[in-house]
Length: 127
Image (tube, rainbow, N blue to C red; front, side):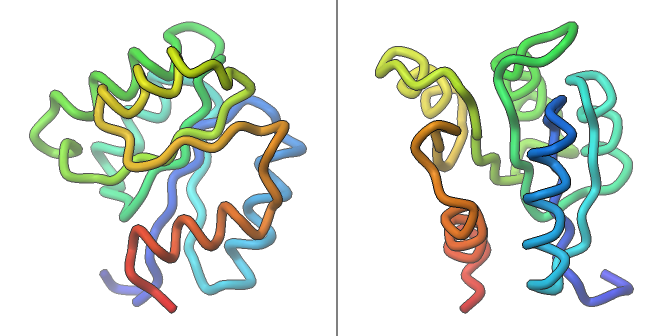
């Protein structure tokens, strides 16, 4: 990694939320990449090799579940940890996301902005 910063790819179509998460990650010395839909996110994950992906489920085009499945199938991206951040908070959706390979699942209505940073730091073992 040339910059020495961990790269975080946010695949999310809510630009307000992306700006909010980006600002907190920027302050914490992360390099932030963004995509607003699944295919763009998959392309960026392959080309940029982020250290972690924050993924929404309700996206235009392919769902976040489909995106996660593809990320875990491709050899270039299967080892990248994925944290789901979604409005879908039913037990079934959470179970599905974790079963597809996500390392964590946050429900937008229930999370604090600092929590996403804490989860990312924990997954990447940064304190």
